[in-house]
Length: 473
Ligand code: UD1
Ligand code: CA
Image (cartoon, rainbow, N blue to C red):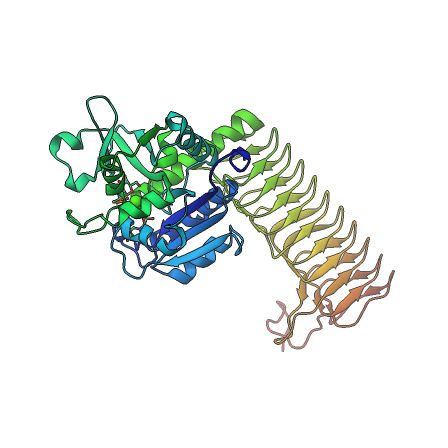
């Protein structure tokens, strides 16, 4: 991002993430609630890191350890400073928690909220540019604002007659007239760090919540003759905050709608019913792939061109090649499916299953941590775990790789062109050579050489249950 190359003071970022989020009515800290499968704080950290700042300070309090872990999944430990706010006395107090690191520095400090997850790095870059360029010498503070049809819950931006910034008033402290203002404070600001901390020391908690509000700082700066600028952004979605579960659900829906729209218009994907389809923004899907209703695709999934995904299927963090057909109600997690494979209905692939080209994994087949070669078929009712299977092998219905002896997992290796008869139990560790075959119902406990047929335990008559008509006993 160009930020790092532009002249001027170094950029630091401060993310506020200590609050419990009372309005969520949750035992989980608000910033750990998930949007698009990742904690809110992860989204903000990912965006912060994209700006290549000198340091990112994250103020944590509630569930500090868990929040810290989420933070470190997006940013390097060298780049990150975790700051504790012991008691949550307001956003001003949260900023104050990082005082010792920042108060004597003329760095540019970008303040972000852990509960405003959709903000884009490009928007923040424009905000920073505006802050630096303000009247040729830079502002002391620049506030990111938007106009909302329904500003309920947000701090309002009060401007003077000349249209210049005057102050921010929280909804609960606003007069009726002020509450009518529809320009709101996004909770995202640029500050000169030294000036911010000098002024923060004067902020009082004389408001409806008895908290120290960061939002009081800009008006105090202005009263001191400093420049406070406003950067009004046009995309309200980016600055929507999450304070309750309704807002979280609405954000999720809007994000999903945007993702599907992008996939349809820019990538040529068909969604038969976008309103019942969920796709992560991290997922990529190729041209002419058709997604039927009620499909869920999560995480860093990639799907190639010309696939068909049928209803009820869920795919998580998986790679799917071209021309793959995934029939109804499959679950595919952390797995790879090569070109031309046909999966399902009701198949379960997990734990790094790797399914080769033109394979067929049919009804009620579970594949775990197994590699399956080109053209191989397991069409019905089978468990394949910890196995490698060669090419053009047929796995009969009801086959089980018995991989677990109650203590440890063992591997099964099956070669090319093998015919495993229905209901074969392959007791691992075991090898079945190329071109070998097993009879129906075999219990195979020893390696099978290439080209050999093994059969086991055929049924025999042990007693008579019903006499044939006409026979006397
Ligand atoms: C805040 C702003 C409001 C703005 C809105 C935008 C204040 C006083 N108000 O209100 O003007 O329109 O954001 O979304 O700043 N936090 C801490 N420690 C605390 C309190 C909060 O770390 O003691 C963190 C929270 O975890 C959260 C962020 O600061 O991530 C914002 O706090 P929140 O209580 O959600 O503020 P809002 O009422 O939304
Ligand atoms: Ca908030």
